[in-house]
Length: 349
Image (cartoon, rainbow, N blue to C red; front, side, top):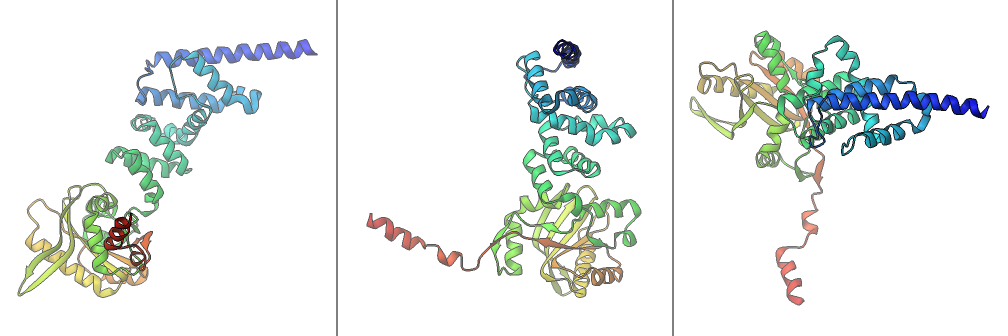
């Protein structure tokens, strides 16, 4: 019986070693250099390796030791090549399993999957179990050239479920192609988690904080936004209008008026915003610009009331909410020592 088991194991080892040799040959034919950490050839190899790992019988035969054994054997076969740790091999298998169904339908998808760094893919696979959600972040990374930190920020803030979710009347007020693009500009809720303000903040405090953190705000707004100004002044008749924030979006070729309210949405807000949008159209819009878009960002909203208010407007408007996480207790500053108190303590030493 012992000899039979040894013979069976010997056959298994020969088959396994042949597989390792084949993987080594495939890797070398891809001309992947050890000095290149990320490139298309590497990810194409990962996709094929993930397929073989998911389908091989060796995984069942070697049991729980399979990934460790495969890691050790690939690392020893391919000197000075990294990326075959047991953990990474599991990611490689997940990479294939997650995207294979879509690749079967759209083979050209492989070129897009292999155009972003592997570390990005690992972040995406950690957060997304649904292939459509994962591809959303893949395409956004390609479109915006996101760094890992930016990608992680949007994964954490669940951009997939927020983008294009604002209540709006774009289909009724814009051409079909324009309404789709305008809808993609919106989010609900907007994440203002990059701000640190007092718990009992006022509207002016929030607006001031957004302007002070304009780069983070532009990142949250999305691709193509350029900041024109805050408290932007327009003369209308004998009156002055002050727009909270005025932007221009180069993707939709239109001005975007953003008004921020710290309370719950009120129908009259849409009338105010619509007036600002019309004023910008009359005074700033030039040939080649599309209709100005208005976005109202409130602390809260009743969706039914917001829908009714927008239905009554002839201007392209959207209504979203916002969320904050870094709220500083109101008495926090008073608990800190003043400059004078610090200087007195230092002078005692």
